[in-house]
Image (cartoon, rainbow, N blue to C red; front, side, top):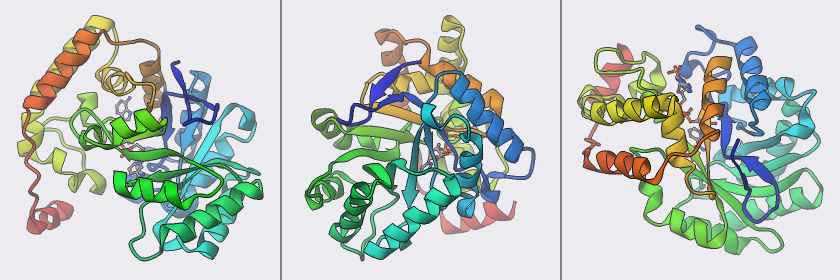
Length: 323
Ligand SMILES: NC(=O)c1ccc[n+]([C@@H]2O[C@H](COP(=O)([O-])OP(=O)(O)OC[C@H]3O[C@@H](n4cnc5c(N)ncnc54)[C@H](OP(=O)(O)O)[C@@H]3O)[C@@H](O)[C@H]2O)c1
């Protein structure tokens, strides 16, 4: 497994982590084909394969995700780094303190390793949220502070709002076809030694190669994901074909190639969401090899040539949800 440092903390985290939005969330199909047993085994399987970074959030499955993570890590707490998040409706000073206490209970741990602000709140000043975060550090309830979905400007504001701590990470959407982060955030993070935690690293399963225009996932999450629009997924087939070809060359899977492409820089860790132990094992394998520079470039080049249509009308979203 490839490991890197969380921000400037000295804490060693695996560059492949486990994402757990899928746990407890009906929109992902929780309870249909997978449930608590698969989720717990998936985490244990990932840890057995060198993964030590687990990401959850109070909002996932309305707390079920944190509970499941808590059960899974009961006997391996010391081996794992637990990251969770506070939802923007709890961004006030008291809101953050209380949300953290509830998360600690659900996770059944004494300290959260990385506590992240899930989304910026346009109404509550970031200074207020960060004061609460610093108190949580002082009280030993959290170790480090992170943010998520913060633009560069918002990240800088968050950093300035902290008096004695630092923002050690920013969790953002990042995969081969969704690379907005590369424009401003990634160069800044590299300079400032802030970890970029890449979410949706498999473009919600699309980059595994198992979906195509005639075989689309049926859950609500992906019905509203623009990439799964027939027109877009058709355009993306050239990239998927290349991922398959490169995967064959390395005797890996397309998912492993897609994840390994992301973690080419030590500042990036990828949290792949899983539904079962097989996926957890497959994804962990992405941290066991290194793509050659020329293969990284081939993937980047073909992705650059694809023009994703980003217009999805409200009517189309509505009709898709009815399907
Ligand atoms: N901070 C935020 O705002 C935010 C937003 C989104 C996500 N996240 C975090 O990031 C994590 C990952 O993002 P994501 O869940 O959106 O997308 P993702 O990791 O790109 O895709 C996850 C989905 O891909 C499929 N999959 C995963 N590994 C696979 C494998 N090896 N082989 C075949 N299929 C595989 C599974 O669905 P199927 O089997 O159904 O295809 C799984 O549910 C989340 O769990 C969450 O922790 C954070």
